[in-house]
Length: 139
Image (cartoon, rainbow, N blue to C red; front, side, top):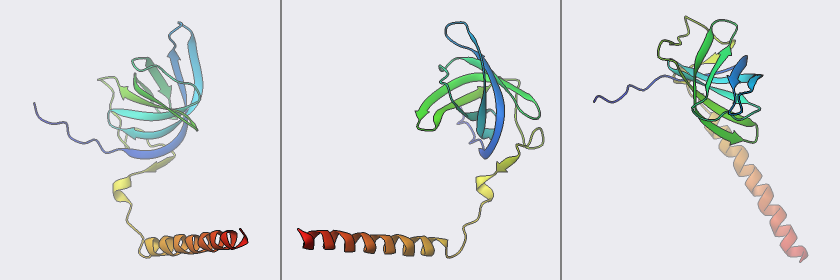
């Protein structure tokens, strides 16, 4: 069987309305943040966990997407829920474009940025070393 082609994932940030039925048969609805989207799925940041295998849908400013939760990871920010869209659903930027959409493959490194970050880190380390030395001298 041929290997699956890598799906380009887009970073995004947009509030969506999520609906699902929990393991107790209770209908749940909440607002979540759409964090990533790709042709066959999405990742949502939610306040409640969703059991993998649960069918769910979410409403955007455009279409309604349906699928299954395939993963739910707890995080200090909430729960990252990965959704695999139903077979008949495909996403593309032409179909629906979240308000904040970024294709990471199009981001170009900025010259000098690493150098500035390295310099700042070196300065912070030097300051920390001075504090440690001064504490040792006081002991």
